[in-house]
Length: 344
Image (cartoon, rainbow, N blue to C red):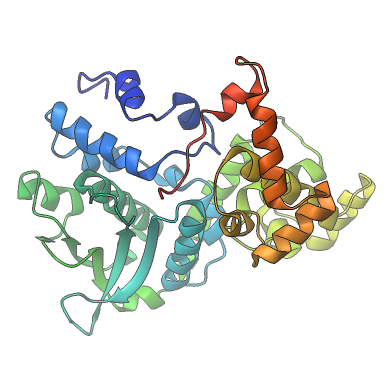
């Protein structure tokens, strides 16, 4: 925004997006506000290709914790399925999927990008940003194995058509039913091993960036890894041990030496994450359950009663009551800065 001559703080304030949420890995913002911000900024600053410019400024690190979800994917189709599951948990408005070709070619498949919130206007800039990042990440992971044929964008061009062709490097079609990358169907079955070193590097680099200490203990390493994969990937000890480069038995032994166990650390991580989501957001309890790695809301309810002696609803009501009686400049002020992932 600054490079384009805009004022980020003013724009964020206008659309009620707190700068504190952007600075925190677990900050939550309104998808609708995000989209309106992009469209208004592009219009007011005379930058019709803003979404593409933002996408082009990203590298593989943009996927952050998503790397933890797809690190062990066996194929491109498997990686897309895992990515879709992760994004649904963390933003119900987003999903990616491998689908049939919208143009009906049997040898072509669609890597589709969906962003849909009932009652929220369609955002051209947000769509181009999401599809552009999807393209850049796919290219980074698969290099020459992407098999990209063309790109479909649902809206009419808002920039010079040649800008789209230059960005994607293939023909771009407009006005179709969905936003997608059209790839050769063999791409879906392609082994993901070629992306293994790159995705593992991102996954490990992401974890290491969150823990600046040079040599944290085993329990801290597990706590950090689990905190990032809850709701996004397997929380089995075999998966966590692989991320940490350890044998599962070695990991268990190190945890025992520190007076704890894998199950105990997992329970603590779930407890802390659930408490934060229940007491500082208005997310539905079913979504909270998914975000902390429970398959059913009933499992969350049982766990919360065990942890706190109350139901999730009672815990949220109590937290709200305490917030209204807190000093104006106390902890409650920080909670006021939280927005929701999805919009009612």
